[in-house]
Image 1 (tube, rainbow, N blue to C red):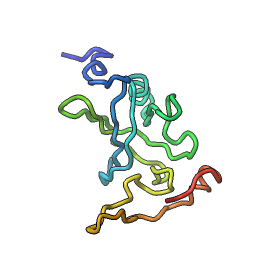
Image 2: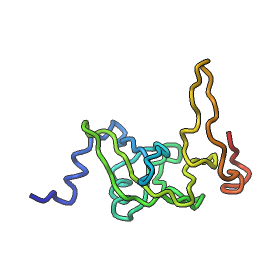
Image 3: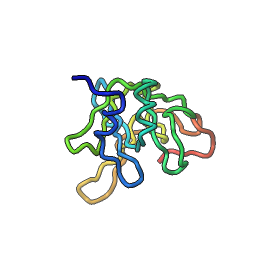
Amino acid sequence: MAIAAHDWLDMIKWDAQGLVPAIAQDWQDNTVLMQAFVNREALELAVREGRAIYWSRSRARLWRKGEESGHVQKLHEVLLDCDGDSLIFRVEQVGGIACHTGRKSCYFRRLDDNGKWEIGASPLKDPTQIYGSAHKAE
């Protein structure tokens, strides 16, 4: 039995704001690139357009990943967890940079044995070259 066009969206447990977290994962090497949120419209458009589209909570609008940086995420697969309240976007990260700090992944800090955050990856590109002087690397 085929699922009707919008039934798949109804299977998701949206939070009170109509959002669900979406983890972007590299479709080839499985690196976790970033986490953002999607609403129903963002998810429907992402699937239709074949690219990662999120809901920006800070901007209160749809956010097509790469609209400023050019670092688009081509959507290869969408996975829903067992509880229906979290997604994984399996993506091809154009340009190899997912993080606004110029790194491949937003998860570049590791908690060391002394309880301190250690920087585990250097930027691949200076964020000021991507976004202008308003951004800086950590």
